[in-house]
Length: 443
Image 1 (cartoon, rainbow, N blue to C red):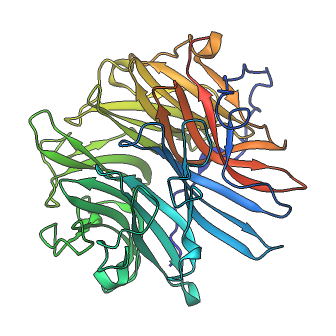
Image 2 (cartoon, helix red, strand yellow):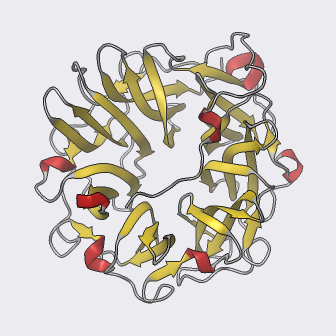
C-alpha cells in the first residue's frame, strides 16, 4: 500500500524574496554527548545511506534513550532496520541486545523496510511498528514488543514477540503511530477501503489480541468522526489523564473542508467514542491552512502544544506556527493570548516539548535547521541563544554534516539537553544515523 501524505510545504524554496542571508547565531551543542555532541549508531562506511527517524527517553531507566532508523549499503548488500539504545553519554548500551542495537532484519520473520512508531510501557518494554513491504506494492505492519534487554517478548503475539496485523484484522492495514493507555495498546494507521485509503484506530490488549470493546469490534473509522471533510490524515496518537481521573486518547488530524486545510484535534474515550466535553463538541479546529507537523502532551501545565506552519495560498510559502490548547480542548490563554504564534522566517516548526518554564524544539528552514525556546507566555526565551531565543544547528545545505529527520525529539532533563534524530552526511562518502544533543544550559 502506498499511502499519500499531506504536502510538506516548508521544504520548498519560497517563490518570493529569499530568506535573509544575515548569519544567525548557533545553538550550543553539548560536547559531552557522543563525539562532539553527535552520537552515531554505526561506523561510517563508503556507500552507506541511512537515517534515524525518532528518539525517545526511557521513563524507567535513567540515562537511556532509544533511537529508531534504518541503514543500507549497496556495496555490502546490508539493509538494517533498527532500534538502538544509547546511554547518557551517547554511547551504545551493551545491556540492550548485547551490542546496543536490535536489527529487525536479522530476525528471520520478514523483510522490513522501516519503523514508524516507538513507545515504552511502564515496565520498560518497547512497542515498535515495523513495516513489511510485500509483492506488487502490498504492505503490512508488524507490531513488535521488545524487553528492556532488547529481546523479543515472547509473552506477546502468541509466543512470537510480534503481531502481524493481517492476523488481527483480515484486511490490508498499515500502522503508523502507537500509544498506551489503561493496559491497552492503541495504534493508528491506514486501511485499504473500497475507493480510498481510510484512517483508522485499532485497540489491542497487552498480549496483542484485538480488543473488541473499542469502537466497532476493535476498529474506529476516523472518517465517521468528522464526515463532512476530505483527505483525513492522522498526525499521531497519545494518551493523557484528565484532572478528574479518566484517561483519554488525543487524536490530531489533518483534513480539508470547503477547499481549506485544517488541523483538527479530537479527544476519545477508551471505548472509542468522541468526548463531547472536549473543545467544541469533541473537536478543536485550527485556523485555516495551519498545518501541524508535530505535537506534544505537556503534563506539567496540562496543555497540548502543536508545531507546524501557516501556508499562504497567494504567496505559496509557509511560516512556522505554534499554538497550545488545554486539556479541555480550549485555547491556552496564557500563551500568546490563546492565538496561533506565527514566526516571520519562512519555514516550519517540526517538534517540541515542554520544559519547566516554556517550550523547546526545532524546525526546518529550507537550507538549515533552527532550535527554539519559548517562554510559557509565547515569547522567544532570549536566555537561549541570545539575543534571539533561537539558533542554527547542524549543517547548511549543501554542506557535509548533521541533518535532522522529521521524527520525534527527546528532552534529557537531568543533563539539560535536547536530543534530535537524523543523519550525518558526506556527499562523497557515507551517511550514518545519528542523534545530536543541543544544550539547554543558560549561556
